[in-house]
Length: 391
Image 1 (cartoon, helix red, strand yellow):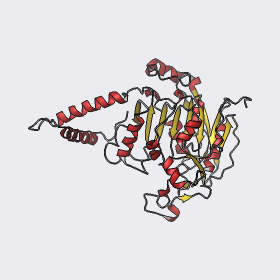
Image 2 (cartoon, one colour):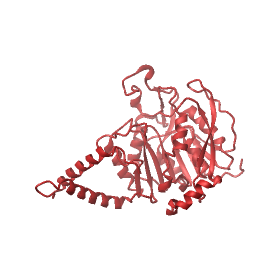
Image 3 (tube, one colour):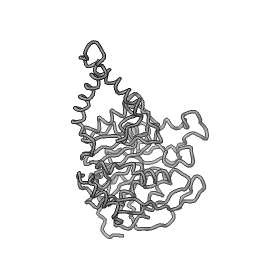
Image 4 (tube, helix red, strand yellow):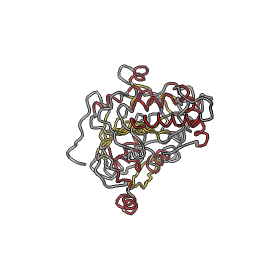
């Protein structure tokens, strides 16, 4: 373990933090899996993509075919990430989603984890994203409120190759100011609600309205969420970014709390990258989702979802199993226009589509309301032909 620790110590009011060091220690964590199956070690092979300085802004050369070919041929760009998981649970899904599918990264478009030197992992679960960021040379500050998940998170950090990097971990949650004011006590303690299915280890939430509904809200009793006996310390995102101004990237997956939190955020401090998993099984309001995207554009120049369709109407019609992930960046994302260019092109395309769709009318389209109605008809026709437009 390195003698000198370079981390800035958190403030006294953030008393729940621990520093966990990656030291290639693979001692089995003492946790009791909910389904009775043993905790086992799995290794996932991931490609680190490119040797480049951490924190360097995106360069267009990443799309060069010669570079892509060298990446595939260079064995030094391949790393194995060891992870302790509970077999037969959604731990396996979390590792596959993050490490194999790269759900929180669009590398070929320019949104890369290594472009932010320090990441804040909100809803770290067992550490899939945290360990992935460590493998890319980043520093991480991780938050996980569930006690068993937190023990696995610490064990997985210690299991990573000894790089001399420490992860500041908090067994705590992050919620919006309004939500904490409604449900937390004066010390910021709040009850965490566990998912009713024993195999589901990452659907725990602080949302109160899930206590009496599960499986579509049709069953209660043993199928309902259950509040844990011991409340958990909660903070706001603004508090954490104030105490850790070195944070450049934020990943959020907090099962429904992200909606109100993103609506309240007005100051993102030094954050240059943001990736959020939008839990639309809790709220499928598409207008609310689009409103959050517009709010994020005040700070980030490029804001996009991982799909270009499915949230155009009143409700989000994408399946929850697909996952709706939001990406925001201050640097260009290849293939995507900036917010100012997008507004101009969108307005022009809507007028063109409106004129084309209304060409068989006797009178020309002149008013804004007619343009909007014609553009809506054209959008419905496009959605009928293409159910899902991927970037």
